[in-house]
Length: 424
Image 1 (cartoon, rainbow, N blue to C red):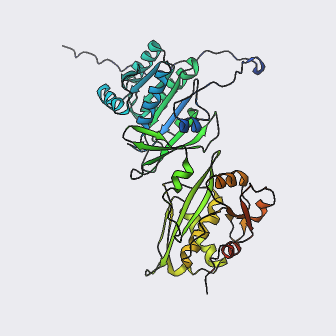
Image 2 (cartoon, rainbow, N blue to C red):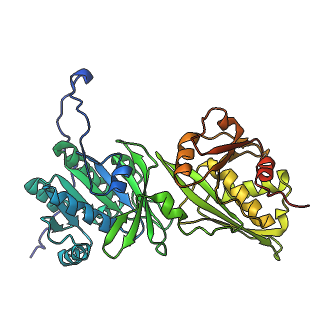
Image 3 (tube, one colour):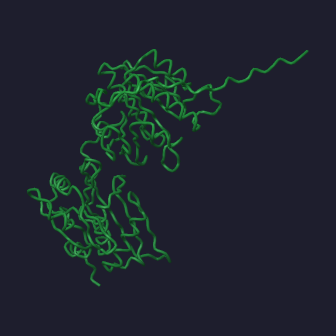
């Protein structure tokens, strides 16, 4: 008896396009973007004003940092507004989602929950329910059954994201995608995923800190590099609106090695405490530890302090920290770091009503910075009366009432103004 023939696996076929027609640009209707509030002022800030109709948004972050918690709170707010919302989970059961919603006080909403990770089934439910907002938690758990690769593979993530992008653009449904991150902190999966979506947001922060930072690194509807600050509480993620006050609330008064800097996170001025601890080293190679700033930049600035300000850093350990878990990247923080190092070196504090900002070059010169007036207004709001800044910037800015601007040309001049010059 002949063996039955094996059925050949069904060949996977790419689906067809939208079938749209080419149109002249002048004939396309361009209505103003309609923003829907997410219920969180900090999330709305990062999104550029709110959730845009038909937007595809990607939220990444470490496990347990609060991605699902925040999105579940957003879903509850949208449901209370009368919106139709679908929450698709490929990682948790419906009971688990219910228990988290109960802890957040969101279990009485009309949120539709679907526990499914087969993308064909999810697409069918989307067509049947026709939600106005949708959350996919997470995109790495979704897969097409017709494809032989495992969930989370490059081809699966790309194809599932393509389906969701097509659905969002054709129906106007705003879709949030939750994405896992690798050990290096970047989103897992193909890089093309970040190119396909409209908004890419990263949750940052240490689990030992109560604050979580939500940063936009791509936004087709608003400014990039906007920052939202949240506090993880027993009842969910709480937006922290007074960021400067929060970050400076536990600052040590009269301690050496502490210097206040006003940075710009997107459109928001924010005061942070830059700390330095300089001690005698008993190692052959002095220790350098940096948290919250680029370590290569810090090494460069320490070399400038040794060469241009005559600080003997070759025999001293240096520990640098940005209080509150914030990460600074703009060069305007250079001068504040240098003054914190000098303050710790001579063991004399920077006056408590002074803020410092400016970029430092290799020759020890202090270069101009942008938006000094907005930074000065934020400093005045929190009670600072003196600002040490580049002299070139002072020429183009009118100091706000109650603020005295002290312009300097070099790091050595800045140290002299603050009385931080070493005795020998």
